[in-house]
Length: 262
Image 1: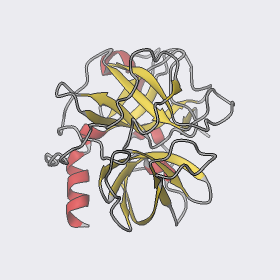
Image 2: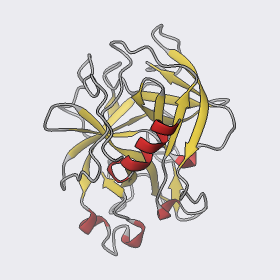
Image 3: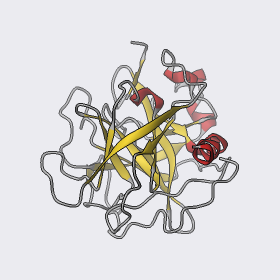
Image 4: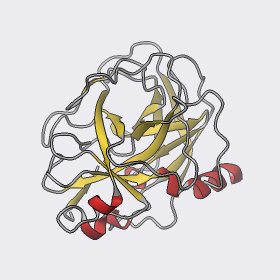
């Protein structure tokens, strides 16, 4: 594998997006902790024969994930998932009917960008207090340096470690492009179509791929600003190698067109 490990035209905002009924606990997260159940109600688990990736519900019948997650022919999504080891009651299991990988995605070059895919669900999810869509950012929207965003998922708790059983969250401050693209950081691997966030002890890890980088807007709503893409090949917590996310705001036209035509 290479040195990295892969883990819209303005889209009308979904009414009621980005406002969880159970507020996420964002007061004391440092290196990651179990999320408050159902406080990230757009987080989905993507499964084929087993859980493979995360994803984000962006409309009742559409999920956003990473292109590198799509390696099988048949998938289902699990909504209102918290504890992977037990069925707790509110889960919704919905098959994926169509998969749309960005046409410029190159599976041999994650650092080339375009690591984004859309999944159309066989039927619409039932929107309730535990299942809600995230908001999409405006086309071209930017994040500020050190802006606190949150990664969520069931990925490994540390490089080579066990996968999380319950949904985890960690605060990942945004690293601006001018910093992230410096030669001793990610250099030319950091594209303007990506978001760098975290670093040092805080990062996404294997199994978090495809899941959201959640950032709260000035309006108080939560936006999926990034799709978890890759980390450094030496480990999830390598200094000056923040987690790399596909920058959703760069792909709003493609998202909008794909959803409108299908």
